[in-house]
Image (cartoon, rainbow, N blue to C red; front, side):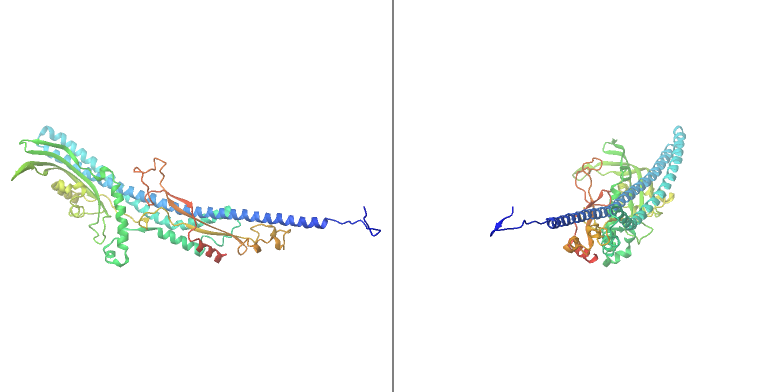
Length: 494
């Protein structure tokens, strides 16, 4: 209806809302586009972070594999040494049995009915024991070769880990996100320097060849003390790992009994054991790492009940008759003084102290029969360099980037619709750093022995810290160490 003003009719007002709707539509499109870009960036950022985490975890897994390989090979080398101890013990025992049979045959030779039987038994035992000795000697040479192979394998794997880590890094990044800029990779100077430092300093190769008289005189470099400490630890682990036959073969073959007169007691005492000692051939090489030796003796012992002054008591056991003996050593040790010198009075389960004369006969027989295979001593091995309780190894920190301008991160800015639109440029509003997406990640190997699996659980149920004798190293992602330093490095590289 037209209005009336001053007696005149006003015209009807009309117009279009198209301009208004168009403006609202543009705002909606821009909002949707902005949300799309933000969603794309968030998705690509998540994908890039997952790729960085996967790459860091994979590199840590390679490092973990190296630590576990060193643990397996250290255990294998200890097992090889135990096998050597068993081998020399078996040869020593075989020589003892042979001598024991010969002595029994000699004693019974005065009795014709027994002479034929025991002579045949003695010859049969001698032939059998010689066959055993030949077989064991070959086994000792084979074990010596295996020990050398394990030591070389450790060093090769330690060096090859770096190349494996680089290959794994590139493969994981390529498969997870092909658009990642791999010009900044594990081999980039800042990252490889940190990774090399951690890889080289956490473990170290220790060698008995460093425990020498020359290095001992050079006290300022600390080489002698450092290597001797770790080699002594390895030797102790080896000796504690021996089985009972190798460690101690001492017992009463015939228990104590009283004879007439009643103030005298007799028994037959068997002694024997194996030892890892030094080298008589190389006086410049210090440390007890070079020769496995073993001794077995048996003697009749007696003790008497005596009174001295006001004191009456049973006196100590004394050797009265040697029954059997045998001894051997590896590495060409042919000096008679070897068993008494480097061997020691209290070694071989105290053979020299318990059966001194039989022990001397055993040493004489060894001088006549000779060595039992070649052994080059304990080999170089890897161990954790740091003293104290360790549960985590140095990890790897990674930086991955993805360029925006090349279209790796597809937003509407790089489409025909959004070309040239400042409204869709999230970089201008702080969405990118130097036109790139970036992600940081870090992963480390850590030591954790399972307590919920009976086969792996410690018998004492105590916590076990990191070492290179049990292969329980695992990789895991961790918080970034020196985060501010890493961010500065990222800003420098981007």
